Image (tube, rainbow, N blue to C red; front, top):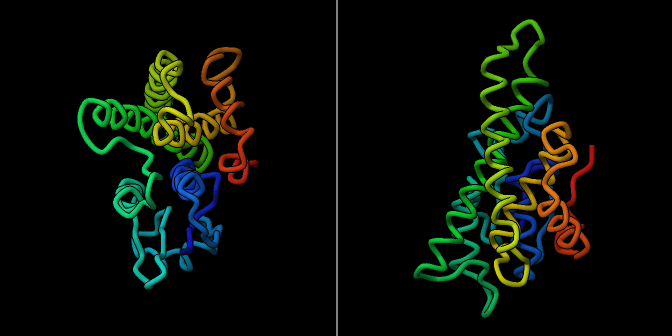
Length: 201
């Protein structure tokens, strides 16, 4: 399989961690969504978005949730990262939703504060998105004691991918706060399934 997109994207990294935790081999194609890479990316995913996962038969899956759904449906025996049904599955999906929210708002802040020219910055909107990201951090921090690679691997994968991205790209949002998320990140990134895709600038 081929995973397209840089690990800096929390959505690409979530898929990378998922693949690693399921013991699946893949080739990494770190195409960017900007600059000269954009036209190349559209040859893989016409939407011009990452991640994209190209399967062994040539089929290309797009959108994080759809890729994860396929990985779960075709998981090797004993390698599903989400409960199959019941209250445990509902709780896990809500955990994924919280992590996805944080990742989305973290990426939105990059576009608003880095990609958009300074003269076009809309301060009220930026503060609104920062507040939404902060809420995501607060909620995940309050639930961090329930998250672990061993007990809730899917939620851990999504949470670490989102938190590490925000900590790297928006350090002022994290600051000296969120000790439980920092501890969770440190413990997870000590494992090769997480450290192999840990992003850097």
